[in-house]
Image (cartoon, rainbow, N blue to C red; front, side, top):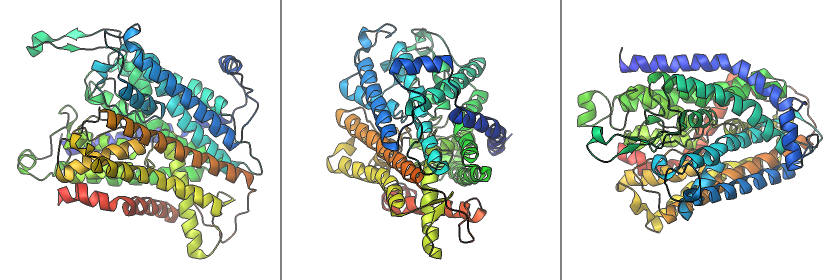
Amino acid sequence: MSTSAAGVIFFLSLLAALAVAYRYLGDYMFRVVTGTRHSRVERGFYRLVGVNPAGEQSWARYAGSLLAFSVVSTLLLYAFLRLQGKLWLSNGLPGVPDHLAWNTAVSFVTNTNWQAYAGESTMGHLVQMAGLGVQHFASPAVGIAVAVVLVRGFARSRTDQLGNFWVDLTRITLRILVPFSVLAAIGLIVGGVVQNLSAGTDVSTLTGGSQTITGGPVASWESIKLLGTNGGGFYNVNSAHPFENPTTWTNWLELFLVLVIPASLPRMFGRMVGQNRQGYAIVAVMVILVVASGILVNVFELTGHGTVPEAVGAALEGKDVRFGVSDSATFATLNTLGNGGVVISFHDSYTALGGGLLLMNIMLGGIGLGSVGTGLFGYLMIAVMTVFLAGLMVGRTPEFLGKKITAREIKLVSLYALVPPALVLIGTAVAFTTGNNSTALNVGPHGLSEVLYAFTSASFGNGSAFAGITVNTPWWDVALGLIIVLGRFLPIIFVLALAGSLARQRKVPVTAGTVPTHTPLFIGMVIGVTVILAGLTFLPALALGPLAEGL
């Protein structure tokens, strides 16, 4: 079977499996976030933290609880990392340096999972399990909770109550992420993924030198990493490592786990607003973006220019021969459009245009099967902007799901859309003006692409990298950590504020002048606004980087 045919079968079978899961998982998540009964374990947690599960919060109190939880989580994880050398199951590894501990703590608490270190030579098992692993549950649960609050803003009227952060966080973690991660871990173990507490295996007789391959609780780590679309890998090479991803079967399963929750959240949204067709519209936008980008990346990698690629028939550098070029390109497309950040190939080695398209995917903001939670609320924010523009064209006050989009709402959406790109461009400019771009492996256009990719990944919460750049230095760890924090929490505050503004409105009836938001026309408009917005913002930087290199 040819590489292209295998890639098509891989992609179509994945879409079929996601289509089956869409209804059942989406309906289950709808019941989780709208139910009123609390389990015994949940009630015990509420008593422990002093929370009244029946008491709801305004958007400001919800945001305050979210930020407080994130600050405490960051401080605890930072201390965990710094004290690693004194802890059990450290594998003899010392505490993590202060600048790297800061970067790693904020990265995992924000679900970015940017790694400026090699996991197998930096982190012991206890830190991996009880430190980073816990954030694999908590940080995606926060993202889903924010998406749920925005949906409540559309679904409710004449109220300032949007749910309880602690209830949402607890339910999403205990009812969705924990049980599904257990099932996923079992599937990965069956597929050959390692699950033990081994300190390492001596392979010096095979390599001819002193070398140890570290084992560990890889399957349990991978299961929740993938379900939470966390980009962090147990090993430095992420899911290209055979202990994390040993076969083509586990490769398919890992990608399914990355996508299944984001792909099912639109069903939950449709059920909550009482219009399932709205969920289908979101899925249509996601699928169109994925298919278009996937085809282009595959074309660029399978027809790569240059002496070697033309001689062997494809751009093979940086690709895992177990999976081939097409599967690697598809995996990269879905994890950059979707903000998963999981990698099985070296993005820095992609062709200029192929790598540039992966960079552009992240710049779209994660609405193509986006990261858990952020994909749904990212789409809704862009949809509000699209409705506003459509209203300007027909001369009517724009409406979306029965709520008027006034000056206040569009200001919040505009801030949401502008903050991450501003962080990317300012960060890249500062890196070059201070000379810190010298850590990039390459000079010229590709060197610019490496720096631009690092700040784009940090600001949009992706976590993958053009890994030719060295970022484990005090300047890079601190700078990227700040970008990660601002790129995560400022947009979340704007989303919650929008939810509060919408919830206070009363619903307006649908009229002949209301723009339908589930039709092919509107789907095309959302895609157009998404691409044009990112293009106008980043075209100069892309022209100096991957486009210049490709031409």
